[in-house]
Image (cartoon, rainbow, N blue to C red; front, side, top):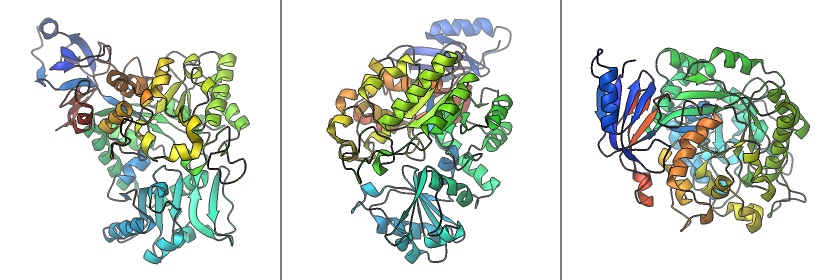
Amino acid sequence: MHIDLVIESSRVFTGTAVVATPSAIAIAGDRIAAVGPHEDVSAFVRETNSKTGAPEVRDFGDALVLPGFHDSHLHFFHSAIYSSPFATTFVGKSEADCVARMRASAAGRPDGWLLAQGWREYRWNPPIMPTKHSLDEAFPDRPAALYSGDAHTLWLNSTALHELGLTCDSVPPSGGSYDRFEDGELTGIVREAAAMALMPRIMGAFSDAEVTDAYRGFFSTLARNGVTSVCDLSLMAHPGLDFIRDDIHARLLASGELTARVHLFPTLLDDMRRFENMREKYTGPSLQAPGFKQFFDGVSSQHTAWVTKPYSNARFPEDCGRPTVDVATMREYVLAAAAKGYPVRIHTIGDAAIHAALDIFEEARTAYGPLPEGRRNCLEHVENFLPEDIERLAQLQVVAAVQPPHMTLDPGGPEHDLGSERVRLMWPFRTLLDARTVLAFGTDSPVVDVNSMDVLYAAIARQDPATHDPAGGWLPEERIGRAEALRAYTQGSAAAAGRRRELGTLEPGMLADLAVLDRDVLACGIDDIQKTRVLATFMGGRCAFEA
């Protein structure tokens, strides 16, 4: 063994303690060989390298060195495209404001589809759903497609509807819908599975070379944020197409441009051959296919999340949302995966979806036993619990994959949609940790940016990263500690990816994935967390970013 690199700092957070301590980290190849006090590691290095020469030494002074962040839930294809020059992103202040922003964007891209992502009508003034008419006036001859901030709804103009072959006689796919005016004409709003089914045809406007460039740009963004590992989860368009571009990841890996480890989670269907081919093909430390993803419901703000009792501001009798996949079908999918030892991650936002998914996981565990060691089923988002389900996650060894910045995306919305009683069990991070549930942090990018400091701030302060509202934090009794937040963003996410034996802590034998921050987020003022800058990012001992 030869020690190639030694990283030193007066503040190293290994993830095995609650504070940072003066330490040195010796790295051999892509793995950590030793961690400990400077003098101990120096002696180890001298002995190890006695015949091979001195290693490179990087002394980061009093900067905080910690395990690289791991985004447990993002959609790489969409994140790359919507953060590239090919599209634009915005929330907007109103329908008219969004159209004006699209006009400005169109000036820089004179041909082809006009794309945007991020609009949220419930944050507009007035908070009403847009229609195709405003886009038609601005773009009578060019197709325009605006993807909502929650990634569940498309807003299209008439040219786009025509290009996609949608008419008033079109029938949406199962789990999706087309909004209509009273006379039956399409409004231009397409929801859930129907929206996802259209995305491949819209995104087909880009060449592989353009998408690959967009991927390169997004990898750079991840590295600038100290993110060394991600879970690329499917956003299913239709059976067999879910935007998992393993070919592009493999191409960048072969050219040495993969600066974050990628874990692929394609859509769970009857036919598992696509996943099994990826699982067999990608076995290295940087690119793997650990399991499956499926959707069980939508989002609360659109009343498409599946809840047990009607929404407090119900739009019609028995307005409870609905499962996007039939419960019997989901059961068949999960049991078939469990029989082969494959983990499944299920999008569950409403309490009915969470409860049904846990029932299925419990049945699978009873029938086939626990998953092979290191593998975990996950529930994604888990925003609204039934009280009796809180402790079931830990009992069933199910990871709660959550996105802290989502808590404040819709100020006042949870109270309006679900009422004060149900709100008490929304994003209950403290309660989940006290029940010994494993939390895994992510962003659901492009729903929110992959800004690592915003993730930590939202979890610790329970305030909106942009506005810092509400004062004192939303449901402040559910705050968690800083070391707990860091562990959720490193160890917890590694568990969700089935990589806890190799990722998430700075210990001998672990992969050498590290981030270096310009201040100690374990001890700085809470308002200073977002001011923290990433100084350097290392993936497998190789510097992927340096400020």
